[in-house]
Image (cartoon, rainbow over all chains, first blue to last red; front, side, top):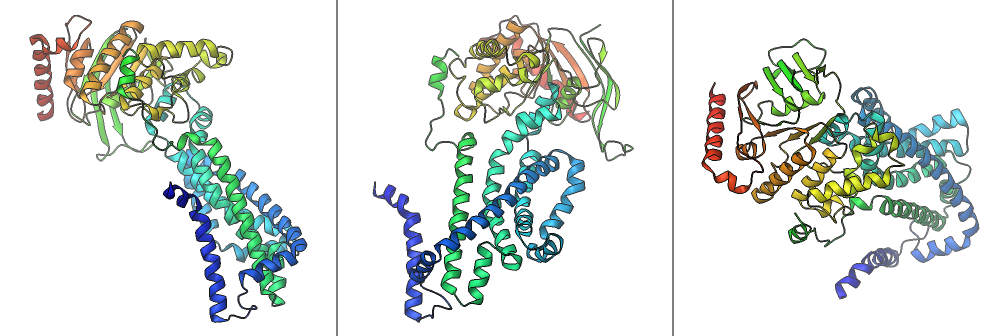
Length: 267
Length: 266
């Protein structure tokens, strides 16, 4: 019973411990608030700038969501292609890896030249940063379909489309959702980078302006907003994952039907 | 004319579209065999002798490098749709319950495919009848992981038979099971064969299994595989576990073992 309670409250306790440690460091070393504000000051800033933070927060959320949505669609399509065709794998995968190794922050100025300051560079950076995990995971799921299962399907005269719809996509869902959790957090990183480098709105922009004014408590308040949004989106993908791929998670302690039952079923 | 005719078949595994070299693996060499409609044939031989390759040739999943494979007089050029297959791994889809797994071929093979939606109730019934035959009545709603290995194999047999194929190809279907479960399933398979009367070809390295189930046993030599002996099994059916202790059965198994060891050395 006590162990169960401990397990339930463990995440909250560790989070509180981290905040207390932060506070203690500020107090003990007497850090000035333009270097590291105390948690209390960050929260005070959060309250003071609540209106600006919510407007810019929503802007960041929207940009992130757009980039993420495009990444999911493009990632899924590319993943299916790369995972199910050897030719597509040979042709596309090296290019994808090359794209993924480009430092994305370096692309923001180019996007600004092309599309001007505003939301578009943010959407593109979020997309660039988050589509690769989706491609890689979906491709892995498709490439690791058991060969025997493929033979069963092909011997029945299944087309590539049948195999993709009936085996590939359902089988890739757990991999897909695992990648979404990574992709959504990366998409936030992409948006905030773009807003810091070239935004005229959004949390990144707030942080840039606040730090140039030495308003470090506001920087931390903005960070809190971004992390709350990130955790929120992560929880949403986690929730959808649980609903759609419950088959891949076996309930703990579930008993496998035993031989006794089989015998009574008339074997 | 026989139902299935394999004549002088070679099969080389190599890179497609390239000239064959000495490094390519000759899996099957100059193999000929005929199988009658409704026959139960067992292919036995040492591991890696090309038994599974022969099955894939019959199913039309691969084409022979030389020679011909004919089913009901027609050259096999693409996957046959009158085939059911089952393997050592049950390969059930983990996101479908047992009944939906069994019904999978009905969503793919014509003429069932086009009618699957309106015939759903009828198809469910067909699946349930088969599941009952193999002793899985009451397990239709269970998920695959809730079943033991032997039960998953029973479900796989149902999946292979649901679209009433005229040929059932089994690739070591019971190899991963314990002896008791395996012997149970011999009985199940024998019953299914009497019930459906389709042609069954089973690949196995378990000689007692071959002798118990088949009407005809073909022994293959080690790689490159070639059929070195075919003998018919004249033990009356239905065979039971008691049959396996009769002198005639034991003698047959000894004889098969002898030929396999000959095939290894030659």
